[in-house]
Amino acid sequence: MQLTLSLGIIMIKQDSMMRTTLAPVFLTLLLGVLSFACKKEESKPPVTRTEPAIVFLGDSLSAGLGLPEELTFPYLIQQKIDAAGLKYRVINAGRSGDTTAGGLSRLSWYLRKDVKLKVLVIELGSNDAMRGQPPESIEKNLTTIIQKTRAFDPTVKILMYQFYTFPNLGKAYGDKFHQIFPRIAKKEKVHLLPFPLEGVAGKPEFNQADGIHPNEKGSPIVAENVWKSLKTHL
Image (cartoon, rainbow, N blue to C red; front, side, top):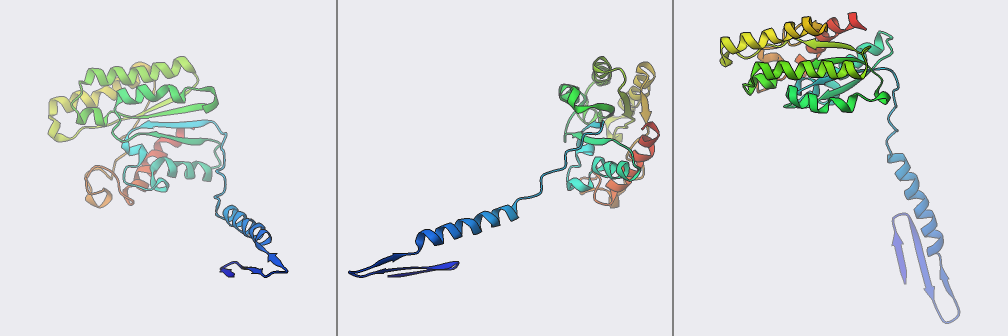
């Protein structure tokens, strides 16, 4: 009997005088080849960064809904930080659909010594407004995020973005929502950063089909807006 394989030949001959088997040798060679192939397919281990952290605590804007990771603005900010020779690592703590209450519930994960949190950037509030949440509860959640971070480490620099609502929510609600951010910034003594979607919001060519989330052309503009307002605080 003769069995032929793609990586070799096992010949088994039987007669009354002799039985020759090359299978054990072939099996050893085959396992060696497969082991080598598997090692070649293994991806390189990720580089572990240990610099102090900048955490973007946000929603789908930070998470980069509909975009590959390398086009999310926190990823692009890391590139700009590295190019500038600054020693920080960016942690993208964005979660699509998240509210100020959700951000508050997740905050403790980043308030750990091993994270080395140095800068907290709060990018929350838009989803609260879209759901018609009371401005008072939004303000309370954002204030608690700030106070809880300060209780963990008073040296952490806290930045917060100004946000606006959609016109369909009404002028009265919109005015109350807009006023939340500067009021908190003044009261809690945090840095208020300008609207990050300047030049992108309302422009179809820079947004996905939903008209809300930046596309591959809009995200770099957002990253540049963020970088301009962020770099002076690093």
